[in-house]
Figure 1 (cartoon, rainbow, N blue to C red):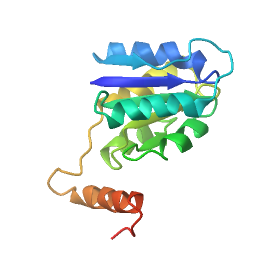
Figure 2 (cartoon, rainbow, N blue to C red; figure 1 turned 90 degrees about the horizontal axis):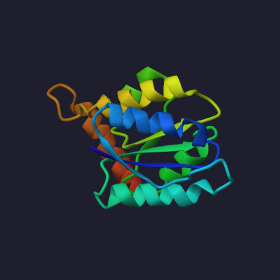
Figure 3 (cartoon, helix red, strand yellow; figure 1 turned 90 degrees about the vertical axis):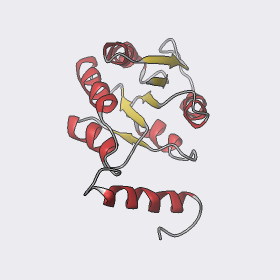
Length: 155
């Protein structure tokens, strides 16, 4: 898989751990910055990561800020981008399996490098199960979310 990554200054301390986890899992990445702890606006990098996924140039994304909240809110404003903050192993896996997220959001002021590596590997190793026999309820729910995204009611 090709993973788009982006971080603001608050997430920068765990950026290297994200890259290490991506490479360690056998994937490639494209980096949309930042490259220091100098202040930058997270919506700018979120848009770049989101567009990379929307265009099909990246399969998934990892976004970092201080708490993970800002990048998550911004990412979820983009059509076809489904982002979640995941600071525990269960959520990092289940969010992909059940909710089909394509962007993992992490807080550089919330978790350290060791936990970051574990979470990124869990996220990258997970697969959506909604197409599996007996698990169709997840696909049905995702389709309702997509209807909401289009401005309709979750039919």
